[in-house]
Image (cartoon, rainbow, N blue to C red; front, top):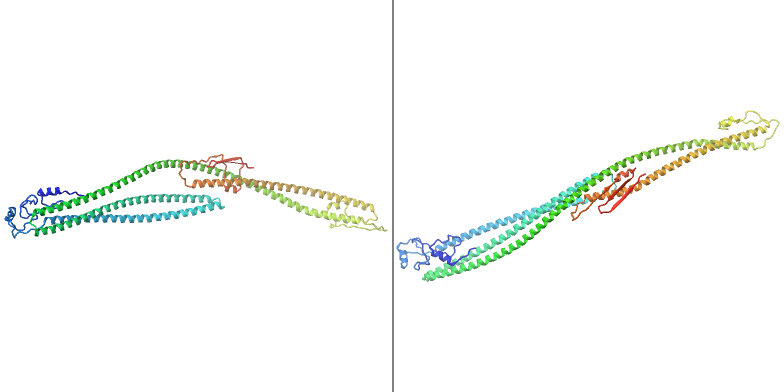
Length: 561
């Protein structure tokens, strides 16, 4: 902005500098150029000097006539050239400034368009990344659901390490994508803040340029109107008025009035722009103070979070060490249980083979007992027939011939024939001999019956002993199976505890003010479910104390037979 003073213009006029338009904003410097006179013509100091005169092709005597107050000849012509030359230069300067401002405005608009395009590209890229992250999160949730289903469903023992490895890989991928997403969010936030600041600055520059352009346009229009009015006045004064002093006074008054008007407008606009800039600077200073305060708070909280992260990492390392020790103890107990399982299986197979041998012996004894029983039944039938025959009355005749021929089909036992079984001679009315035969046969039958009964009792005793031994073995087997039931229940409890521990270790840690989580493992002797499903157990006393993270203690004692 420029401030104009009428006294400055008047002093410039009186100093004799007639070159109008040497400075780009020298308004009111109304000097007149002459092609014939030597030196500069001062229109305000010499009252005899005619304003706006320019001699064209006149003699040297004519200026002297004008200086001496002589009249005007017909050969001289007057033209108004100085002011038109200055106004043309000022218009060119104004047009040049206008073009520069328009070029700057175009550059700013092009920069804004480029920033908008880059912002749209970054937004599309961030949107694509967010969609990919959402897809990966959905995939992770689906995989977690499948993992929970697989954990709840019965599965083989060898699948758990592979699934844990897959879960670890997916967790690492999720953490990587989350880190990339956070970096993209911070980068996008920084770009948006820079774009907002640059947009605000460009809007402010555009407003300033628009105001300057409007000011220059207004000045141009005012100057143009002033020039037109002055030209009309000069034409009118050249036709009718001959008083040069009044004309100069009117011109000076008009120029001073226009200068005062322009000065007041410029000062008003300058004060408005200064007040607007001061308010904006105050607002920016408040925002900067708030941002500095937030920055200090964030840096303080960042230090606290770093210390918390370090403490949590130390706790995680301790928990990992405890987990590794627990896994080593579990592997040791698993190997012990596997060896005990093999030992019990060997003993069970030995018992089973012994039982099969006893059952085979019992079956053989039963098979040997069947023909003996049939022989006893045949002897009983023969004795009944003999008693029936002996009980019938005997008819005496002069000659009694009774012959009993005994073949191998009559008696099957050898001892009966050795003691006089069967007759091969003739007997006549010998009742005493027959009674003695009967008594000997009865004694033989009683002896054979007692021997068969003794053998039968012995076999029954052996069968009962084998049956009692079998019942004892079955009872021991049942007791051993019942002893597995509490072990299986404890194994299920330990499986639940291990699953909770793995879940707790796999979940991301939330940073809080105080995090305390301690697991104490003393005299531990726990095994995985897969070990006990194969029949594992303990042969010595073992005690396991597990102190849960919440402070609740659980004490279990296992005793094996």
